[in-house]
Amino acid sequence: MKKIIFVLIVLAGFITSCTKNFEDFNTDKKHATEVPGDYLFANAQKALGDQIASTNVNLNVFKLWAQYWTETTYTDEANYDIVTRTIADLTFRTFYRDILKDLVEARRVIEAEAPIAEDDIANKQNRLHIITMLEAYSYNYLLETFGDIPYSEALNIEDYSPKYDDAKTVYLDLLARLKDATDGLSVDNGSFGASDLFFGGDVANWKKFGNSLRIKMAITLADVDEVTSQSVIEEAYAGAFNARGEGANMVYPGGSNSNPLYLDMVASGRDDFVPANTIVDIMNDLSDPRRDDYFFMNGDAYIGGNYGESSPFGQLSHVADPILDPTYPVNLLDYVEVTFYLAEAAARGFSVGGSAEEYYTEGIAASIEYWGGTQEEADEYIAQGDVAWSAANWQEKIGTQAWLAFYTRGLEGYTIWRRLDYPIFNLAPTIDDYDLIPTRFTYPINEQTLNADNYAAAASAIGGDELTTKLFWDVN
Image (cartoon, rainbow, N blue to C red):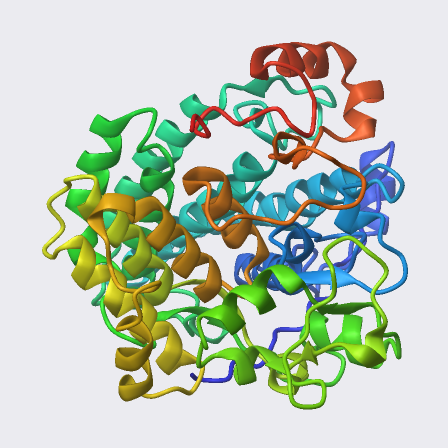
């Protein structure tokens, strides 16, 4: 992967005035008063990458909720307390203020450009299409987290109380926008260049990203709108990530721009997280060759902390050092993830150029290779009866193996569990029934107080603002 040095952005302050003369007096006519659109785009990418990567309990608890990791001392978040630290509020703020608002501003600035040359016109259009793709990715994260969300009235600085839109309606609109954006990209022209922290301006990779994201979103609808799901996936799969190693990654340069995992788990000097027994026990039972890439042994064994319980750091396995390297990349969407979605699509009878078994075994092998393993190791692993493909219980097979492959990508692991009901999670100490494991975030407290009417309407529309309210696509 090509390392892309971050664009450091300094946002200029704006001076307001009551009179034209005073405004003119305070205007520096020799320097720009507006941040370039490319810089705003890069800033949004950085904020998005940081949010996905982080395991800071104030910002992102999905590596806990996916039961990849658990906490050692303070166990509130592993026990599904998102109120004490107002995690829902901080998630909302990060996406709407730090990511989506920068994308909106980037679009506004770029749309105002007046290129003359044909290549420059195409470059402008490519950048606008790519902004649409990143908006769709960000909204999808919010949809998978909360359900109905502000969308059609969101991000209007003059409207502090936007309505919440029906989640399925938003999915369908985003899928339509994604198709237009992906089809509209011109691979013969450039885009953001070095300001693009994911692909370095490579439009062909953005086109693959757009199709891959369409697959990711469409498979989510499979149980509630099979027609749309099948149509989108069958149209998009040929243009998605289609080779091992392909994907959207952001490589951190280190130093002040280190991976948040390093900042959360090393630079902080704290020992707050260990691998959960949920994933460690499953991988031990399967003799999974990725164990030494995911965790360190404690003595001569891999030992996970009991999920949701206080876990003695020194007596358990730890997260492997390479994951905690300052330059470790954050992975937003890649070939491995797409391959498991196509395995599911094929298992549902969709025509995607291969069988469910072919995509399933390729997803496992590609994941093992990604983590440094060999094809021989993958073949031996897949040959086990508990791993080998079975059409009769494809949900368990795909759900478990995709969840294992999505390690470090908490929301993806949590979502595959919600959709396919596998693997079987452990019960945290604070709950005594499997049906009490949360299936969403409750809405932000600020929304309940500052946008009360629209909050109440949204809560009613989804069946109640509860942690256990299932999102519309979670019907099994």
